[in-house]
Length: 296
Image (cartoon, rainbow, N blue to C red; front, side):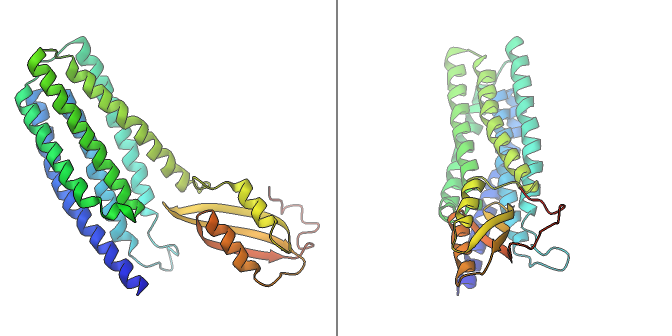
């Protein structure tokens, strides 16, 4: 029953992501075209950020589809890390886009470009409506899925970008201050860059099998060492297969394993957000004289 319900939840999330991806992807094309026609850097930078939404939505949808494939003899963990590989590529491209927006904004501040506010305003309003609809579609699944939550937050971020473009179009229309457009474009670019950098660091950390964020390795080691019968903990490794799926392996030195030790290890791991723990029990003399077997 649990697996059946989980399958229905995944399919529902996939449908929601598919609808939001279609809406956002279609509007992205419209925004890019009118961004060039109007000459608005703010509109183009917002399109760049909407591209991040399209890629994030596509990534989330792809992760659901590919993650449903079973493990095989070549990939014993299945295909769940595909999400992280795609996220790293995504982050690199988006970081380059953010830098280009800043470079273009600097050039336009030095040499102002005329901006057609009418198409800029119309497209920004339409973009706001698309983002509102997409956010309403995704908000339900974001309550119980980190994958869906990240997609929802991307859309909400682009919604704020649309609001900024609308404000810029109105200011330029009524005041004639064309420098507002590149300034808004730069602000949107500056908003995108740190989020992209965070995504890139998190992706690389998973690919390097680093300790997952939120896991204190020293505290974890201390709690395992404090378990009844455990004299030492070594060869302790904690990593993520993909976002939200953490694993642990460890060697525990024990003279005689008390009843329930493995269950206690699982309980400690669960408190640290680790849902898969593998331990090896060893007697104190297991590595006596083995100089090559040293673990921090």
